[in-house]
Amino acid sequence: MKNKFYFPSYEEVVKAKNLLKDIIYETPLQRNSLLSEKYQANIFLKREDLQIIRSYKIRGAYNKIKSLSHLELEKGIVCASAGNHAQGVAYSCNILQLPGKIYMPSTTPKQKVERVKMFGKENVEIVLTGDTFDAVSYEAMKDCNKNKKIFIHPFDDIKIIEGQATVGLEILKQSNSNSIDYVFLPIGGGGLASGVGSIFKQFSPKTKIIGVEPQGAPSMSHSLKKGKVIELKTIDRFIDGASVKKVGELNFHICNQVLYEIKTVPEGKVCTTILDLYNLEAIVAEPAGALSISALDFYSKKIKGKTIVCILSGGNNDITRTEEIRERSLLYEEKKHYFIVKFPQRAGALKEFVNNILGPKDDIAYFEYSKKNSKEEGPAIIGIELADKNEFSGLLGRMKKYRVHFQYLNKDPDLFRVLI
Image (cartoon, rainbow, N blue to C red; front, side, top):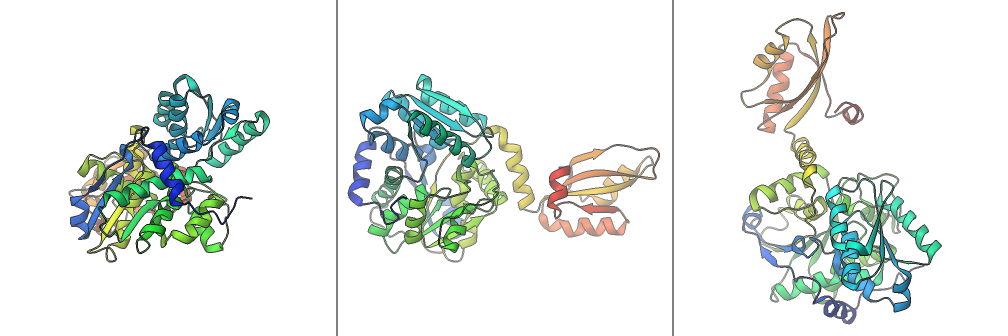
């Protein structure tokens, strides 16, 4: 059993910092004027999306691998990761010229797989298997046990935590001793939260550390409520960089000491944040990277007039996911609505629907219909996009006024998933 009383020491984190100084970037801590104005606060972004692998994960991975003996390294190393930890391990293997085997979920975005290949070059072998981190981790551990290789855990490891803690050291140095009221950071397995949180606990104990989890994978919040590490039965894997069924034992015990609060954020809200960052700031954030900023709306009253740091933890977003991100955002913002509409099977029925039901700025974004001549009515699935969510009540009013027979799908998740 791991030592639940372990707490990262300043001396060990400084050792990690010195070890990493020639390998990583000291990423900027940038004041964001748009967010600061929006929330009437002093908001800074710690830009780990600008790291060498576009994620903080290189810090822990390299620190762990460098801590291994020559005998351990000769056996070869193995890791399991949804992407960013894999890139950190791959980059480390290439720099150190070590053989590595990297297990990744078969659902991992292609962009992340290609980047692992790019960073690892001929020094790494990639194995795509399973659908979740937990399934992949199981296969990786089987390999380690069978072949006596060393497993590089993505978060539940002392050296990983100390490597991630160097983000906290940088923030304190870059803030020029200015008091930081809140730090918002993402939580998946808990490596970053336990590392950064431990540094602030020691050197800025008044700073409130807010962990931000995906609503579909609230592993840490559930564990803290139960007082022990628990494994979720199912998770939403959309925010792949922060979606695990089970947090680390070490991470759990440290987070229990250093976190002020945990906020779970809907995936759709994260998608809205990703789009805003890109459209307004030209910042490419992956879903896990945008988690911390996504939480600000829920703290708007508390953070007014305060100094805030949000850790933008990663920027490995696959462009092929853009349409899904936009769709989830529109659904969350209540600007896109799906219906099953029963149309009379006669010419002109759709034209009447468009003229009578749609508002001047409404748009049909999805339409699926198959005419069946043997029936008086035929069902069509229609997706309507609104310019303003407040127009929804008017849309429903017109459908009722003109006696349109419809079924609303947004509030029926099981049917929605099947049809859309």
